[in-house]
Image (cartoon, rainbow, N blue to C red; front, side, top):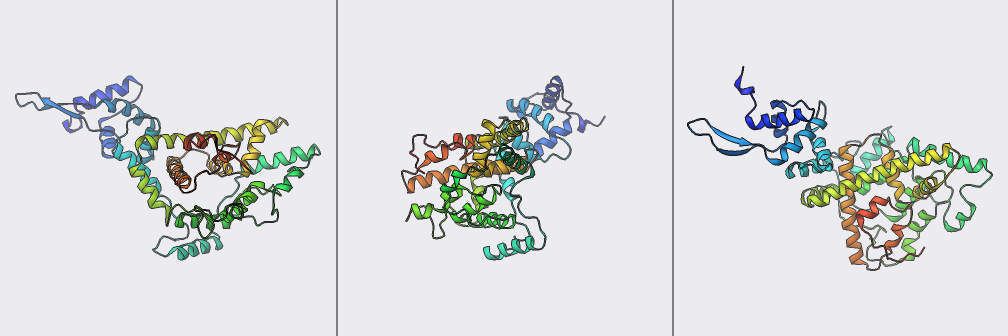
Length: 382
């Protein structure tokens, strides 16, 4: 037998521990996990004496990690994804590996159409526009599953002889004929926001209208459109009517955040991101169930309200993917952390913001409200 392949006594402890819990682990796997930063090295002990070498022991964290690694690792599984999922489960993944995995998620964000060749912002946006114009994939504004729920709501009320949306909503929309963002426009909007760190309020309103094609009126989009008029000379609005807390490409900021945020904040943000996905999938399933039973109720109401508000962005985003992806959850987590920092900065620049609005039903996903810890006593006026 090749002695090089015989596990050390310390590794044999981990192998035995895995076997006791129903997993078959080899010394080769342990070595591979260590090379990828997923498993700590064994701690060196004292010498055995008389030229017999030295002892070593697994560090305490290794026993829990080896079970998680045996369960989640496998052919085709990227180490950074495994690291993120283990971290999300509260397992003691080495800190450097966790931060590198979050940063690797940021590094996956790229623009379509070869727009990463050192051009200025306009050049990169032109490349994206050209890519889309020549048949490249544009943004999917409303996934098929969400569209079906919307259509079922309309069909139910029409069959009952009830106009939908309610006619009295029209009085709350000052510009029902406003432009609606197209999938092509949404792709350019996303690219511009990524490269500049800003999003003009008029374009956000256009996006909200484009996300709800079944609604002839959209009071929330109208509210966004009239914000500049109703809050003139706001210190948090830039020359293009955007809340620009960043300058330039967002990715370096997210990359830095992954390297500097506390592990506690990263963990809380990861859990919030997963909770948002669970909320979205559960809400959709409950609304589908109510509509299938021809009995719209609380879920259908929450769905319809959320679809018009910023919560709808998260709702549709989660419905675009069938399975959770570690990279997507990591990016959502970093986005929540950045959002929390920006809201704190806005509150500093303009005290007395009406944060209570964000706590109204459907405005934000409930897990997002919890994570952002918005003041619940703020006044609201619409």
